[in-house]
Amino acid sequence: MTQRNEMETTFLSLAENESFARVVIAAFAVQLSPTMSEIADIKTAVSEAVTNAIVHGYEGSCGQVTMRAVIEGATLTVVVEDKGKGIRDVSQAMEPFFTTHPEQERSGMGFSVMQTFMDALHVESQPGSGTRVTMRKKITGGLA
Image (tube, rainbow, N blue to C red; front, top):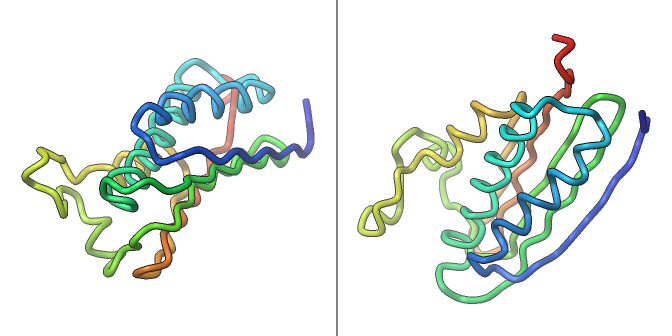
């Protein structure tokens, strides 16, 4: 098993690129021999983070989303970052069911989903400068 590895990819904030990010993170994480459940958890969390960047960070305009991942031992850290509008109140945004776009039938559960499927979640944001979502998951590969 690789002790340390890292990758970075940047893509446009287009809805079609959410599935691209899911495939990239799954391909990167596979070197840790995760279970199918762990891969599904990681892909779901990344999907939520990327969708937030596209829908809320750029709100219909086009920008760039960067996804970085680091493997250290059995821990995968994923960072999804945008340079979009940012979040005024991160604590409020992380509350279950909070959404700034109820008219779009958004559930407001993105951060809750990330917290559920990953071991750690940290959100940094500055209005007008973008948002950085950092998620960590220890991969047990069925050994837990």
